[in-house]
Image (cartoon, rainbow, N blue to C red; front, side):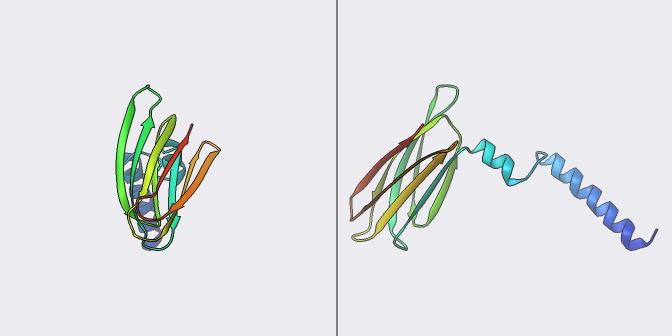
Length: 122
């Protein structure tokens, strides 16, 4: 067997062992199943926002998350339902929020400093 082929086989075996040690399946499908709530915030470039999210877990407990930043942005959470408030911080600019969960989708938008969107998905 040529040296190059031996190295390739050894490298493949090592990478497989590392993948298993770090949690097995490292594909995006695994993370999508764990994070079944996807949030996308888009709108006028560099529009700043703050957001507060309440995620209802399958165990009945609620978790609060606070996020802030500029559009575009994406977040992923795991839970049975989510509700949130997103507030525009710029004097001008528009934000659009889309939440997807297990085939359900909610979309809303607003513009102007201090304007808020209250949005939820079950």
